[in-house]
Length: 340
Image (cartoon, rainbow, N blue to C red; front, side):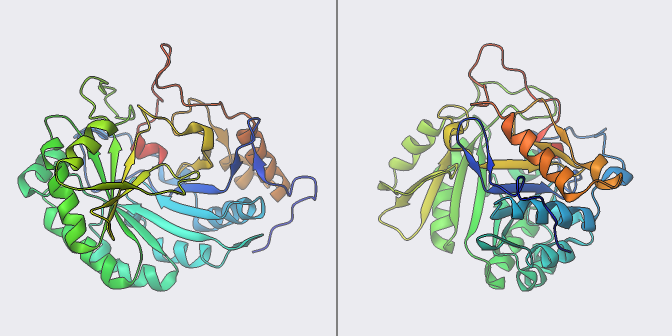
């Protein structure tokens, strides 16, 4: 597949504030094999209709147009992206896409449950990196948090990802008060012992039940204070547009990152744009507006039409997500439906 974009549209995705967008997050499905309490209700999840989910051809076409406009990195998300039956084919086809700077760099965020059977094939298809969600090292707590008894499978998934040659393997942890904040140091030791990178994430207002509370949120400052009781933290330079502030633990080589989306927003350097599993383009994780890609994809739209949607969406991006504004309203879609 090759794109045909007019010269006037074949330009970088730059918003009104000069932010150049090079990172695309693509949700492959809204379905998930877990029911994490901070993300999804236990029952009654309104799944997207199967016919509205982008096909692999449609995903590849959008990625090709985006790459022509300067997108350099693609992260595949969900829901749980490994639940998509053709996920290896998606990775293989996207890994062959090239933009002005060369081939797309592919990564994935996953709960890891299916990695023991898929990691080798994904790595061979071109998946370079993986972020694996793991909020606790206690099997009983994992069961309570996710409403599923899959702790052993996730640990096996971490090992499979490392054995496949993907690198780095990052562990994502959502820190929650009186839930897992007593494991912050233990999780860091777990990462050090296994050569993993750790990412602590402030809990964001993206839960399906809209019960997020700033008072109950564990702040990035608290996380760093806890870590400092056991480790020497050395700040790492060169953050650029990355969401995580990174620190070496005891002079390395293991690093830990803290993503302070709420208390220390990094909107001023944000270079990310997202596509939901049903083909809606979002210029911010917390946006309440979406731009429709599904319709032009299925109604004979040209590559120029898709490029115009991308440019229009990025042009409309606000200076920040507004979580700290008095009038902030949580997005209607939960994280599982948006894609991380």
